[in-house]
Length: 185
Image (cartoon, rainbow, N blue to C red; front, side, top):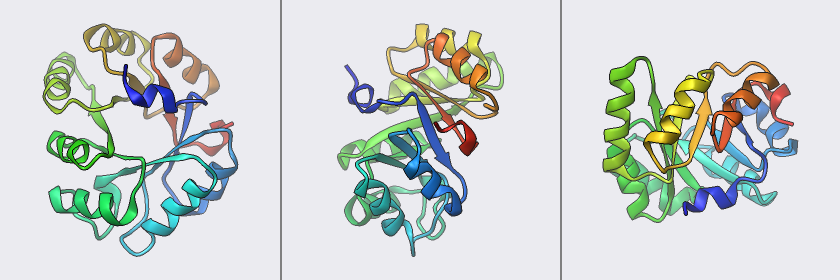
């Protein structure tokens, strides 16, 4: 089994894109927060705020200002910031994170059949703890992905309604990452 499955208590993940919304995410029912904002100067403080309320936090490596999305950047994050894990589109960062005892979520964009097949190859090589598929408003493709890989699937991107969250979950997603704070509870 994949350890990330045990972390998910609320199947809606708060994807925080603006630091001003972090407090809303902290107060929400979501027990997992994806931080898609911040910089080297405040990331430790943001992560510590989330951890202080016993929630799990994943940092999107490509979105942190001042921390390179490379091996040294992941090492810095693991040693100095200590989130639950990272999110990245880069499979090499997923492998590095795993070596550093961080959980890792591989984000893939499914724009056509070729992207689905390449995405499966990438996750077979990087061995993440979960896969975030984008956009998350494709129940048929989410179901197909759950059939192609044993890894937990997180749907994300372009989710605007509770109905879309429910459709992604019904299609087999473990959870749904949502940037709209009204949908976090």
